[in-house]
Structure formats: structure tokens, C-alpha cells
Length: 170
Image 1 (tube, rainbow, N blue to C red):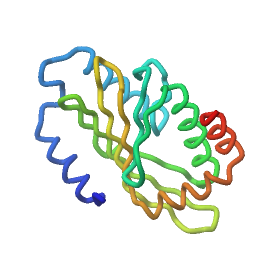
Image 2: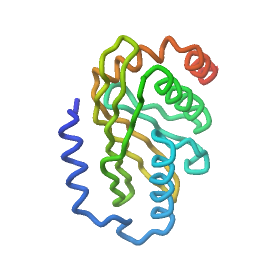
Image 3: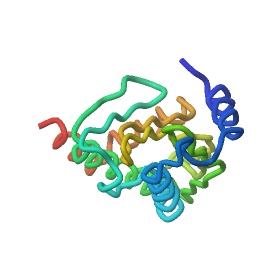
Image 4: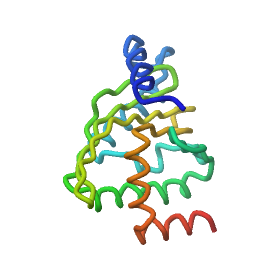
């Protein structure tokens, strides 16, 4: 398993690369700009369906990646993100780095707030987007596995998340 400092090092190495697609690919540049605008406006994974290919692969630093129709994955991701915002008090996610290079967009963030049990949430996260033909084909979400497990535990009890996951598996 790759540790977060390794991920941040990889992201830092990308900083030395050009901030646009090496070929000057206008579709890539437009998609990268839309990802940045979306996350700045509504922190988290962008929910605008038009950003994505028809099939989307979604993975994490813990567990296996899954490929499914985009509507199905966004139908789960949206309620999961909403759930986190409901149970994490003073939820705040801020972009610390935004790198667009090659066919990838890397967004590093600071996530903070408070868990319902009174403990603090402070985590660095990274979102990796792979762009193909101007659309997101893959998302990898990396972060602190301990905080991630705690977040997952709360989400697993959320009726809206339970319903979204059940619908996705029909």
C-alpha cells in the first residue's frame, strides 16, 4: 500500500511539469478547468455528469477499484459526499494543489472538521483524475486510511447512502 507522503511526493514531482496537456489538447485543458471550477464551487468529486465518460472507474488507496456506468457510480458518490457533510461538523475541504499534466489532473486537499464522537478530523487527501478524449475516465481518491475507515463507518449507517448503494447493486 502506498502511503500518503509518497502520493504527495508524486504530486510534487508533477509540479515541475507543464500545467497544460503536453500536446496543447484543448479538450483536456477545458476538462481540467471545469474540474477545478467544480471543486472550488462544491468541494469534493465533481457531480456534473457531462464531465465523465459513459463508464467510470472509481478507486481508493484502500480496496479495489470498480468500473461501472457513470450514472451508477455518481449515484453513490453524491450521497456519500452529502453524508460526510451532514455528520462532520464544521466540514471544510480546501484545495492545496491543482496539477494538470499529461492526461491527469491531481488535486491535493486539506480536509477538516469534527466527528460526531467529538474527535477532530484532519486529513490530507488527493484526487487523481484520468482524462480520455476530454472526459474523466477514472477517479482515484487517496487519503488517511484511519480517517477513511471512520468516515466509511458513519456513511454505512446513513439511510441515504444505504439506499444509494442498494440501488447501485440492483
